[in-house]
Length: 396
Image (cartoon, rainbow, N blue to C red):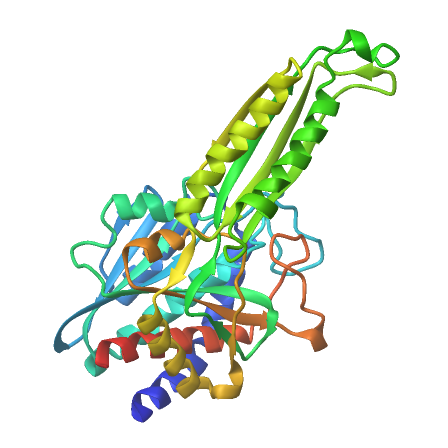
């Protein structure tokens, strides 16, 4: 593998500038989930230039296929998401968003440009490996039901079926030059909660004549935390948070209703289902006991993400070989969610983190913020390491 490693490093250095330009082009032209028409066309044109065959999937998704010259029946898949977020980017960047109100604030421009760079390197090295490599350019990671679930339903993991699926994601809290791995459970399931508590509004000076939905909602919020602190097994991380509460009254007006939106996250599918039932039962029960009503919708989102141990061990070993042990870090459980989890539920998968932060340059903003950015030096590592992981899996 030493010879392969050297060739990959050389090509990664050679294609680095082009990958940066692709990333900046995508960053200037972000598109929202399931609206990635121009991004999809750009990916297809790039694959056409390389002579890599592809098919469309999930409307704006693209699946390329590279076949090695050596004889092998092994198949792997590499995934990148393409969609952006409804965020207005800070001004002053030469490569800033030209689509006002839309921004690549979660690094999907990095993921897509990286996978195109990976495609270029692997295409150059076809004589060095056998088997096939699927290149999954996926739409709609940021919006339910998740582009991954649609692509899987449309057969992205069939004909041929990959023995492993690899994906990477930017991480601003890891310094550029490093990557992170975690074996087993890594990211949480994520469900959206929508609740409306209806009472009877009226004058704030006459609460006895009203059914106060604010007071009732306060009790429901407090009681629902018992789901986390008393019903959840302490060994299963569980999060219940409310991010929006609207009770449109005034200083002396009790409103008719209160509307809430929140999120529920955990790492166990059986407990997840039980918690859904428990939350609805508690909320409805408290409301009815006070002559109010409660509409509680649980909008089921992505499942938890699990990194298959053997697949992750191979990828981590490849990263150590490529970067050195000191540049490979261990990740903690992460209660955010990712629709890569759908791949991990049905295939051997590994989802790792690419360090993109640089404290000395002031590049530290979190994803999903208007100031998010990356140290673009990460792109050379990104394209090289993913290639090395891919060839390691195909040749070992």
